[in-house]
Length: 260
Image 1 (cartoon, one colour):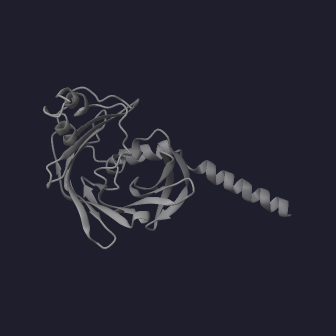
Image 2 (spheres, helix red, strand yellow; image 1 turned 135 degrees about the vertical axis):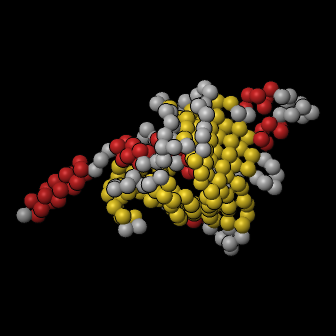
């Protein structure tokens, strides 16, 4: 009798596992729900300490052309105090993402008078970077370029773990590799919206949590607007707040960044 119950439970679990859609199907559905027309989003990234003290504030401008072929986006991060800025252009190519990265601090380091010459700026500032790491933090804020760009929606390596509830919505949980860690995504079954994410170590310890604070309806499509990125081990939080969203015209890109 016990053996029969065991095999019944095992069979039920197997059937349920087989009914879970593959991760690539879920991610493709999520991408299909992104706005098709080019949009520009302007806002801020603010890093907060545990005592609610604002440590750093950066301005953010994002040109999102997800409906193009290939899908592409440009992210501009600026420190208004120092005047330093970073720019990342991404094209989601069939062979993998292509990146073009600029950092004004690198350009300044290459100016005449420091013994390095102008050639370093031409090589490193605004060039195709096949080895660019999207998991690199932005200005030490605890937020990566992958977090900001939702790069996980285009990943080729992902696994559907289970069905789950998030904010009282039926979701699929997708696991995406992130270095030695993994990123868990909650994607709503019905709408394909990302409801949140959590990065954890192989031991299951949480590194950061990406919480969706607010969403915006744009041409009958709901999209993520504001995020909180919480880092428990540091007792810190970084908040992305979008203050303006508008439709824009983006010229076709000249040349494609090298695929990673």
